[in-house]
Length: 320
Image 1 (tube, one colour):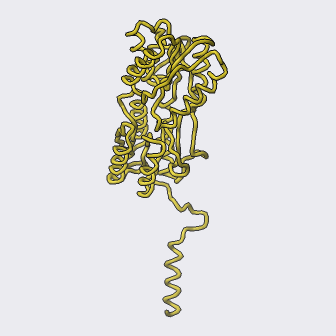
Image 2: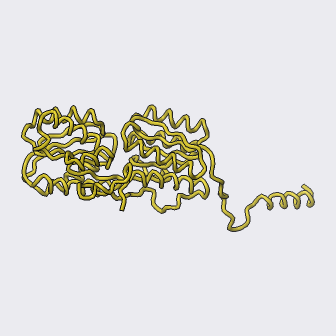
Image 3: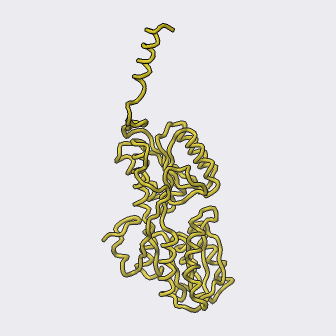
C-alpha cells in the first residue's frame, strides 16, 4: 500500500470513529409500534392495565396493540412472535407464568426488542429492562390487618388463592399468613385455588362452605374471587355472618365495600405503573436507559374501606 493510500484510509476510518464522549446510542425519535400483552381483559384489573398502557403509548407518539395471553404461555409466545414480525419497538408484558414466560422474554430480546414487565415478575433477573409490580407483601399485610379488625381474633376462616404460576399469589398468601399467624385462635380451616377468576371463586367458595359450614371469614387473593365468594355466600344465606376481604381495588369491589358486602379491598395502583412502564420503554428507546436505577420497582398498595371508598374516582384510582 502506498503512503498516499494509507493516509487516505486512515482519514476515512477517522471520520467513522465517534468523537470522545459521544454517545454510542444516539437518541431516537418516538414512534413505531408498542405491543402490550395483558393476561385477561375480561378482568377489570387487566383491562385497565391494557387501556392505560395503550393510551400512554399513543400520547407519547406511538401506535399500540393490546393482546391477551389468558395466562397461557402458548398464546403469549405467539403474541411475542407477532410483535417481532411487526417490528415492535418495545413490548409491555404482563407475564403469563413466572417461569414459563422467561423463554418468550428471551425471544423478544434476541430480536432486539426491549421488554418491560408489569404486574407480575419472571423468575430471572437481568432480562427485562424493568419489572414494575405492586408491593404485594405490603398490600397483603394491610388487608390482613383490616380483616382481623373486622373479623375478630377467634374463629375459623378459609382462603381463596390465585394462580400458582403467578408469584403474586404466593406473595399475597404469605403476607396474609404472616399477619394472621399472630392470632393463634384464628384457624385456617381450608383453602382452594380459584385462579383469580370470579366463577371459580363462586364454585370454590361453595365447596369450602360445604366442608366448613361454621367459618366466620374468607380472605381472598383478589377481588374477582372475592366477588364470586360473596355470590355463593348470598345464595347460602351466610353473607351476614361471614366477613370477606379482597385485593385489587376493582370498581365492583369498591361498590361491594360501599354496600357492606365486602369488608375491604386493597387497591393496586395498576393505572400508575402501567403508564410508568410505557414511560420507561419510551426512555429506553430514546436513550438506551429506562431512567430508573432498579430493574424491579415496587408500588405501594392502598387500603380501601367504607371510610375512604367515596374517594374512588375511576378504575383503580383513589382521589385525594
